[in-house]
Image (cartoon, rainbow, N blue to C red):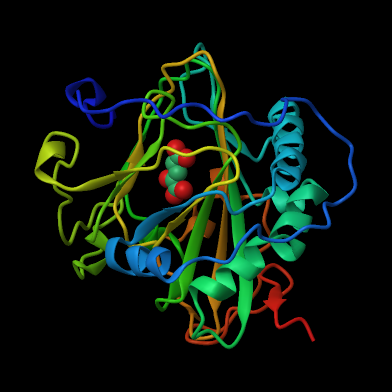
Length: 301
Ligand SMILES: O=C(O)CCC(=O)C(=O)O
């Protein structure tokens, strides 16, 4: 389950590394700052066109420090609801779904942080927004396990296009350290590949890894303060971390008022390893996605 042959991409050059905040656990109050700047029309257009976009220098580093401290805590805690996508003997590719239910920094981030404003700006047509869930993806130094190419859409018990996934890097991310690769425009192909592991395959996914060079990719190299926006239909995956640095990230998902509840067999809530710790509300198929687990974040009154 490898991702693209990174070594085959000689044009890749590492961007100069910006100074980032130190790597330590903090017990700080919730930052009281919003987005550094609004998203531009160009960035919104790129996201619409490609299904993924890097938005640079938009999140204050106070927030990054705040949530990184939470990630450090949860990685140390290794809750029974966390996942390790790498073999037991190797450095971890660590995952934790719904960290906001385990540590309040993630709740602050998702419900009261700058992403709420950002999501409003990315989906200006939405009349309300709910926070759907969050997930940590953290690769320890030399964690070579990969995230195979996939789309998120089949795993989300949701219907509608107002679904925004925001991937926030907590460390400088390079191709070498396991940047996420997004297949530009694949969200507009009208295809949702049947998820891996399910027998009734309606359409086989092409071998994106083998034919990597036949497609146009966004390589999500980024640095703390940036975010990556992605549409759940876009094909994406990430390589291993071949550096001696951490590659930690948090994804946060928001839904607009036109999104409805649509549980299917591949729903993330049927994957008990990932979401067994979650009590899923009884929502009506075709009805709104609004509950204590999926709280309204805008408007709030
Ligand atoms: O962070 C990664 O390596 C994988 C991220 C991913 O698959 C996602 O955000 O949906």
